[in-house]
Length: 129
Image 1 (tube, helix red, strand yellow):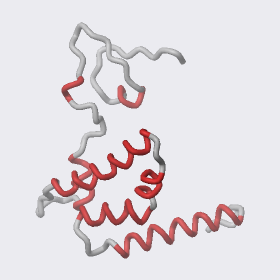
Image 2 (cartoon, rainbow, N blue to C red; image 1 turned 60 degrees about the vertical axis):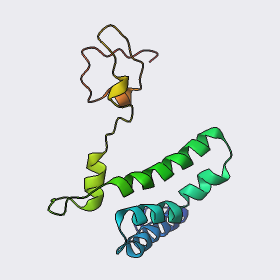
Image 3 (cartoon, one colour; image 1 turned 180 degrees about the vertical axis):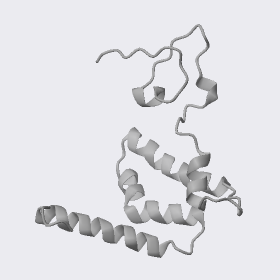
Image 4 (tube, rainbow, N blue to C red; image 1 turned 180 degrees about the horizontal axis):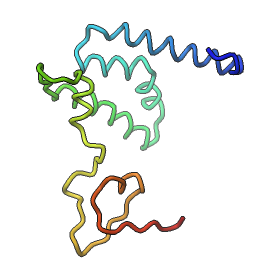
């Protein structure tokens, strides 16, 4: 670890690195759904969102369950140049709104800047900046 890091930051970075290496070792021989489920549990994400009783936290916990379900439904092509994880990630769209929410030519759609980037809109207005 770089000597310029404060001790607390260096220890946190070492702990994080060890966590990632342990997760990698623990999931080496698991299939994709088992890997994802293990990583979500071992990282503490699911416990974190499950213990928080707000609606937003419940939605996030449900999203984690949905991610595991999506990995079960994914069929990786054995002759693919990509690993199973990369294949799964590349098969999923970054825009979760889907085609059903695309605006017609007569409408205005409100979205975040992140949602607008890379999409093919003839005009994008940034307001409230």
